[in-house]
Image (cartoon, rainbow, N blue to C red; front, side, top):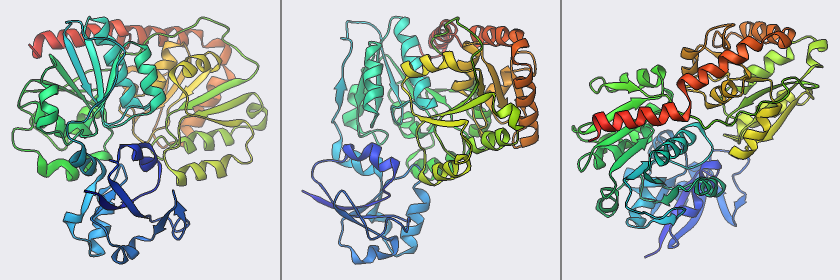
Length: 461
């Protein structure tokens, strides 16, 4: 039977997941808070203001957002019954239980079987950590499957190139018996991210689960409100919980005091190429989705304060996909008269590996970052790295020894560190070598694989 639905939200979330909607779904309208979209058409379907929802005849309103709770509350205030509002994954799973699309790269040949569940497959930090965990387990002799409700096709094909399978299961995270039947056939289940809490709860009643947390503090209220009433008192029974850094562990402990959480940093494949250190221009890069949390504007403001004679010596490359239209427009506005800054967009892992050969300085200005993959990649490649005190990677850096840390939110401190590095760029080889040593000691794939293997032997038998 066809469902007449209204989609609340027309942005990146919808674009990346629209192909997961079942064919029998009939979108009769979009609603969006963006005034500039109201009265226009998307995919030949009208876009309305939320207050016009009472004029529409629908079966359900689907929330297309990573932060849907505010949307839901807005609709309820507008008189929409709660039972006619559904989260995106909740709706899709209700129509697609038992369906799995498999992108196979390796046959199951009787090896131990490892399943890694994550919210979405792309090039963001949590997803990359999951991909590298898959590679580490494969190197330990496991048959590995990554499973998510949706994913970026290019990323999936790249994962397949590592001989790792991807199964898209649109019922995740609202899994039921149809999913549990094939999930419990795996010897080992790792769930990535707080957003997997529902999967963790339901799978752990059948077999042990290894749950690895990466989130900064912002999403907690959203996910707990979304999934909390579906989690019973035995949510963490039969679960071994890890966090990528002490910041990630502290975020979890604010809401769940009882379970013990251990630290498990990620591992990154080594793609260091020993080449010329110095280039015609000093290239400063900030890598990650262009969002307010990544806080690219702080670096831009600091660079704009540099003397003109110093600015002329450098370029700044902003690498990453757009995380929101409004923030990207703000970034565009403040760089419009600053020719030294280039926005290069999202890159594949192969492209990132090549571009690192041209970068001199890697910066993380996030408002909060539980562990920065970009900074670790910079240390791997013997780059000068700057991060702030609100990042998990700061636990592994000592000022003027293997990198630099500035006080979070302190633009003058960031400017001071940048100025020192630019003025002394040719005499900081000792920092480059120490940064590389830090990568090898804490973040190499051998270290990562051995650590996971130890935890499996100790806790998951």
